[in-house]
Image (cartoon, rainbow over all chains, first blue to last red; front, side, top):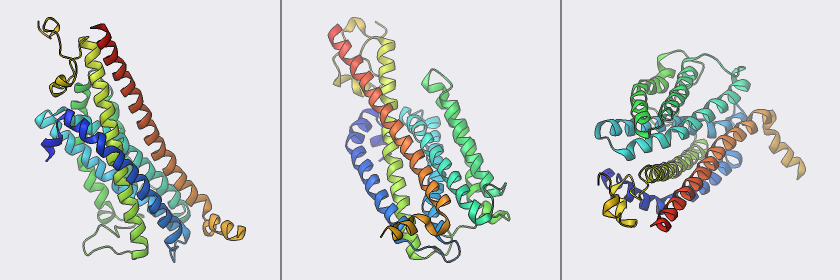
Length: 261
Length: 58
């Protein structure tokens, strides 16, 4: 299944159809989710209306973690099988993960101030999420530090894989250490410990964010493929795209201009 | 009517925290989507232009 879409030409064709569907359904689901979060969901009996911050904060945190896992898995595929599409996918997803991490930290801060009385505390959960943000930023900086696309991606892939150790730390920090942050109430053994009226908006927002992630990743991958094709055209001065499967679609190359001739 | 809207916007006295949280999310994620779309349009235009140039040169 993966190898079927792992061909850049096929990915370009597939994403041309899938991208608008994902993008528009993400927008639709998020509108519904916002309606649930801001209107339908009841205020919390202890936290009052501040609980509405949760519908952004918690799905954003889930996205921050799962996108990092995606970046790391794609990096592993890129390192082991040297697949160009895998490193393009990892590099395309990382800024989206960083954005969700920023949203998670900012909304958490805005929630912490009225509920804990502090914008920020150096608690295990908060600190490990800040480390996650720095891992994202380090990866993005490393990937873009080289002119040649492949070299930065390889260094970045190694960093992304090393950073995986941070994921269980983020997830279990609330169990391992005594933190101000509350423990998990949805993704936990024994099922969710949260009322349906709050669980539904949470899950709708999570689905909306996921669709948005898929759409933006495809969009950014297409951008990277365009850039690589343009670069190779400039370098070769012949329409020989980086990916052989594309060759037939473009004008045939005169034999005298072929590479190595 | 306006009173109900005002009460809703006040968010039980937490308006200063709830609305900025949604604002930040909209700004960051909307900004990312906008920037991604702009970059995509620019890269497609560049590639098309290169392909056109090549065809006329031949």
